[in-house]
Length: 435
Image 1: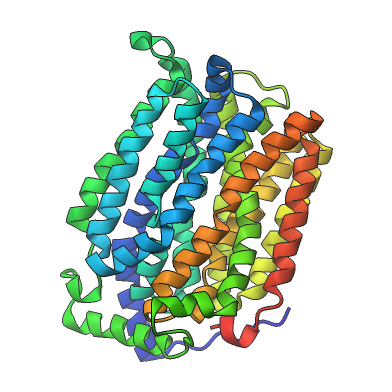
Image 2 (image 1 turned 120 degrees about the vertical axis):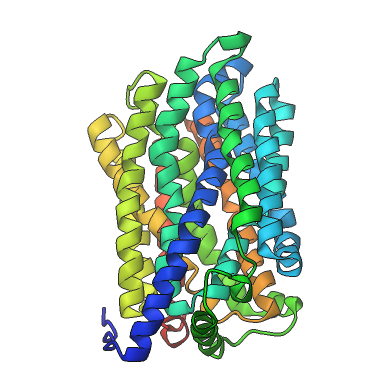
């Protein structure tokens, strides 16, 4: 694939690079911390399943339905939440999101049947709605598109980081706290893992700035550098105007299709990884947690390497197609090698490296043409529709496993979905997205 030449660094660009290193150091680590807390509370139900399903008598399909119901609440409130963030400011709204989802996540310790499980999963999605697209929108306030892939890849490193540390942590909590105070290990896990979201939510009110003008840690000259870079980038965007304009833009719906395909693979990994590992013959929650972290470690390396390469070369499409096909190959091999722990982990590592790399690189596509008020609605539409795959994927896997008794068929379906996503990426115009 042809790669654009990288421009030589001028004094003005050197100054801009210096300012942006300061901006990245200030903003990105804190956003990663927020997303680690978010993702841990969103997907720790995958680990709870190892005990909770037996304790409460949940079938595979019932668990898959409950895991997926998160995304129905998420879907319904995503666009209103992102519009509210634009109205009241990122600092206040992101803090509100984090505190409310922390409280709902802790309430999972009181689940006693399928009905309460379904209700709380729906409420957790409603509470968290707007966080992810809100952060993507927030990044457009600070970073031009040619810097955004790397930044979003760094931000989304929180997903594999949450898997690397969260899976062993969840396994350790469930083993170590089993029976303490008369509670099951999974109840303790929900309670203790909700605490970071509450603490970081309060920290957000003190740390985060609504925009460049509010940043007291930047000089006036540095603010001007950032604002000029963002303004020059915004001139290339073609969708501005009202929030309703985003609904009429065909490219927004193409982005929904692409993102839906990628999210299918992403949540298959995060919700079912402990079950996939356990099915290879591994016993013990801590051992399952440690082995489940291996594919996320591979993903952490891959997503940052691809993000750096995409920004350096200002090329987006093939940097999405390649990891998408990697994910398809990984899932296919995992279906073939499901009888071997070592081979299954290798295949799942390839799948995770591919699938989790797609998401941060994907957001360079819609933010290349969405601007103005339409950006808040457009990004929320794409994220909410795409995240309906978070409902379809775990339920599909559970239903197919119950119906066929095989974990291989869902893997092949996921591989096909990623191929469709890769093909859809190639229908985009490189002149628009390669900036």
